[in-house]
Image (cartoon, rainbow, N blue to C red; front, side, top):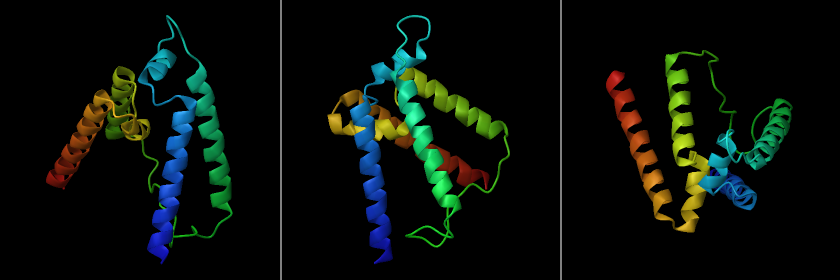
Length: 142
């Protein structure tokens, strides 16, 4: 029963996230690129979406600090390190470059699959291939 509750909570959170992205217009990569283009036709709407996301995350963090454990799990899954190293910086740079070039980051890309647009499907396929390659390289290095 607990597994079903956990899956249901994850599904509800994912649907809320996708709905929020859709309602805010963040499924349109042109809107994201418009935010990143500060020299021409800058579009500040993504800043409001980011501010809303930070507010929700801050509220969630405050609630989590008052809880002994999650509702549908035995413990919170939090990072166990705060180290900033070359892998973190390189991965962040690669993420930012990909986001700037495509206008998609993983969450909005998966939500945008609902539009049926071929470029979105190509991006998600490339993203999944990259995730698979990362997993193979990590296993080979271990």
